[in-house]
Length: 255
Image (cartoon, rainbow, N blue to C red; front, side):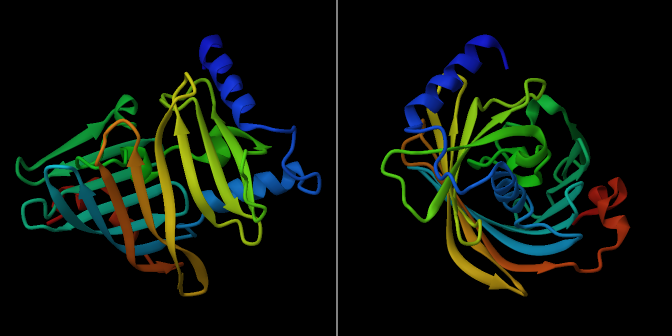
């Protein structure tokens, strides 16, 4: 991050902050654990999920269905199952590399790092949002802050990306519940401190032994009437996943 963007981030923090810490009883280790828990919320050693994505604009609306497999924080495979027009479109990430398969042209396209912040399938979520190449815990620095009109049951954490990452956000503010570290919302600011989008976590449910928000609603601030909602219909953790799922051969053969 350059000096100008860091100054803007500091100004944003000053605007949001009414004290140096939100709660003197909360330690740096607690803040790290909050971010780590949020990073790993939808992941484990492996997982399988069935997801619905609803994309809403002032002029049209559509719903995508997909299956997703993950392995720890390093591997993700997504495959669209509906609607028929997009069925078979697939995305694979292995560590810091990502590919998309487009069945209409029967071609695998490698996604460069510069495109990780681009829209995924015309939604308000980015490629990185879906496959999680960048980690809040590993790729950001974070500190506890106090927010005006703050709820006493929430912790507020400011996350600033490392300077060498191709990330467009100057700052991300996370609100999480003190009791269980479940996220309530995330607000994304550009390098000038302008709010660009808000992610809201909703519909708390239990999947197996894990309780988490089953719905995520992304609202861009610069596009009136636009939003994208992701709903987890099924989410299984620590399942057996064939290693071949995370392969270019599987990507190309996704139907």
